Length: 480
Ligand SMILES: *Cc1c(COP(=O)(O)O)cnc(C)c1O
Image (tube, rainbow, N blue to C red; front, side):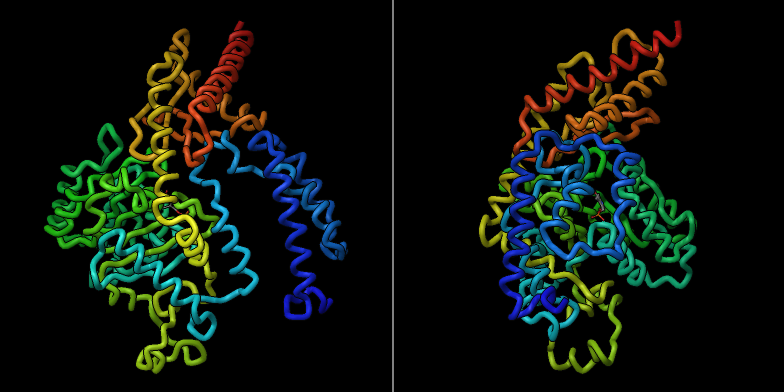
């Protein structure tokens, strides 16, 4: 069994084993014709159930064969140009290399004495990101597991900075299409059930600043404390970007912490052409970025950034065995002092290798491509009488609905759209997402693959219409 421990004696076993795995995945990627096989839960779960975890196979090749059967064969492949569903990106090769290196070395970024250069690399990437945002010389931050954790940490800092003893009085203002992790964070932070005030959006799904001003005013009138405004720079559903400069103005006026949730829109930080769309982000007190959404990084890779490094102290605790106070005096960089996590992956290495191989322009250029593709897709949808499309894209998302001229019952149209999405998933030909707009069911493309072409989009729209028509035809038959 010792031969399975990775060390100097097993270097050859490591090389062979990982190479075998890489060969399988490479072959899979090359041979994948559809983003999904359409496998059903009922079909796949007996295969997983049948495996006896107490009877190991021992041999890597046999285990990879088994893995092929229970996972690789039927996985959902984000690299396929017809995977158009959620905020998942195809990943860049330098980042995948980073993943392989970081898990083999297995540094833990909580303390200097578990990471050394890893800590310095993470810190440099945090500085790089805060400089791109324009947060100023006192900025800092830390890598996190994802946007949800980044939002939680940012709101923790905001709560502490609000210096209010009555958590029942604290309010967080976010748009009605803000991310649900804001609600979850409020709950975790012990705020009351009414803590999150949702601010309405305009036609383009951007927060209405007039309504925000009204809500801030109302908070003051009612003796409540607006501890934070969450502006979303790239909403999950629409990619819409809240008007950051106007919101920053209001935060200044009312003394509210400005958190910008740029989990999705952060890709624009690397874009030469579209960076201006998030102008105003530099006025934030804290920012969430998800490199695993728009920087083409593997899950997980995310960070929370703050304007004032000293606010990170609200997440600091000292343990004698790990990060004693004297380490601070001795200027030993222990990242755990800034993090909600303790043991923590060296995710930063993926972004490091990406920037060193491709450069920021390389990443930004890929994100620009998907933004341009979304505009092409929007024109296709707007010109197509079968479809109703919601907003012109600010990033790379399209929300639309199949609306046949002959059907007037909106509930029947809802059912046709729901059916089309399910049938498409079961066919495996393409994967699309869904959401609700104004109480009605819509379909969604989140375009993050530069390999997707306008003709892929056109073809998927034909597939959707085909499934929806079939449903409506059968539904007529049922009725008659
Ligand atoms: C995806 C997303 C999040 C959550 O990020 P995770 O990495 O999935 O935890 C938060 N906010 C927005 C706007 C998002 O799109």
